[in-house]
Length: 334
Image: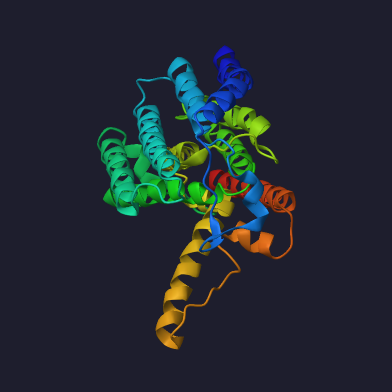
């Protein structure tokens, strides 16, 4: 109980105390977030007011998550080790990306290939290590059926889940409070789920509570109008952490439901890019499937305010988290 309280109090109170000082420091360093262009040379009008808003708030968010986890988690457990390592590596990758964007004053950070390569190294290291020392992770939960031992197929699945979730949360981080709010709901559902797994009840919730608390503390400064953005430092790491939790708990399939908002954001980008390339070949000019991708911008372009889109996405994330928990308990019945 004491560890659970500390897991919440340290990151939340820490965020409230550190936040104003970090924001002031980032402003002094002119670490402003470059804003995506609606078309070449023209800033998206809905987000022009965000120019100069400090980014890299993920330094505080992830720093508090890692610090708290080191204090309250069982560091001898291989699943906690993997969660911490993947979170740290993806946070470092995000920092490099944010730093490149700030110094170049552009939305183009490090190369896509470099991102994938570093994420792949973290994911494959985690997958192989878990497969060797923690074979129970090969048992994945299948809704309405139960657990299925997938053997060595766990390794490619784990790599896909960790990389995919890291990038999906990164794509979701485009509106004030959107990614952090959805992450709180997803992490809370995984706290409930892992609390009903005897082998994880004393392990995984103590890693997830700091994520919930740190995101809540960060949301205090990130709600619209945001005083700071988490940047890739935060979003890539939060996604990496969530994906690793799913891999460690055998809930990869449930993650698709619980993290449905993140999945939709990633799919919208894939559909947009694929459709644009297909129509360019077929018709000689590229056409867009959505008004703008990721999909939260599609609804913005449809006339909804940033706050309306954000809150409605939170509602959907909450519903999907509930559905995911229902599906989990269906596995227990079977």
